[in-house]
Length: 73
Image (cartoon, rainbow, N blue to C red; front, top):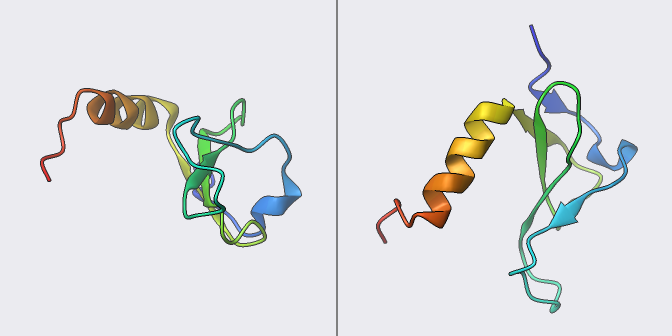
């Protein structure tokens, strides 16, 4: 079974946030590319906190749905 969380996300390097995020230090999520078990996602406000690891296929489907505006407000 693949791991679903990383207890201390700061143990990994290479985190990135969306280019659409502002530089005001606000809330956003960060993702890490190239992880062997999926796509780790963490809260930028708590970099030493946990990260959730999503299956690559599931994360890709989520990103595509967001880009297609599939989530009504």
